[in-house]
Image 1 (tube, rainbow over the protein chains, first blue to last red):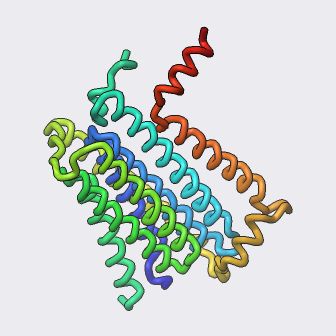
Image 2 (cartoon, one colour):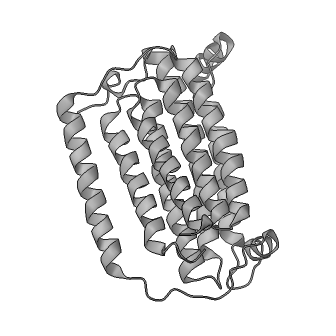
Length: 104
Length: 180
C-alpha cells in the first residue's frame, strides 16, 4: 500500500486535470465541454482524498470536501444540461460558435 | 513491485487513457462512453485507497447520474452517430502545448516539493465516522455546509425545471394578461 508514493497519485490527478483543460480548449460542443469540466472536478477530488489519506489520516476533512464537490458538480451538471436543452430549442444547435447574440 | 502497486498503475493507465479518448474522439456518444470508463476508473482508485464510501458515492452520482443525464441530453439534442467537426489545427496544437507545459510545470513542482510529513496514523473512513462528523454540531462538525448544500440542491432542482420548461400556449396568454 505505502509503496506507491503520494507524488504518483498527484501525477495522475495533474495529468487528468490538464487532459480536461485540453478538452475544454479544443471542443466547440457544449456537452463535450461539460464532460471536460467533469474530468477536471474529478481530478481535484482525487487530490483531496489522497492528501487526506497520506498527510492527515487522523482527520476526515478531505473526504468531506470531496463529498461536497461531488454534490455541487451534480447540481452544476443538471443546471448546465437544462440550459443546453433550452439553447437547443431556440438555436437548433449546441455549438458555442452559434450562440453569439451576447457577444460584444 | 507487489500486486497493489501494479493495480495502482493499471488503474492510472485506465483513467488517463479513457480520459484522453473522451476529449479527442469525434463521435459524441463514444466520448460519453469513454468518460464513463474514466469515472469508473476513478471509483476504482478510491477503492484502492480504501475510502469505500467515496467510491460508492462516485459510482452512484457520476456513473449512475451525471453520465446518464449527459447521454439523455445527447439523444435530445443531436444525431449521436454524426461526427463532430475536427478542431482547427492551430487551436489543437496550441491547446496541446498549453496542456503539456502545464503538466510539465506541475510535475516539476510536485516532484521537488518532497512531502516529508507522511503520517502513519490509522485512517478510519468508515461510514459511521463520516456520518457522525457530518451531522455533528461541535467545532469540527459539518452540519452547516450540509444544510447549505441541501438548499443549493433544492434551488438547482427548481431552477432546472424553470429553465427547461416549455412555455405552453395557456401559460403565454396568462403571462401576457398579467403584463396588461
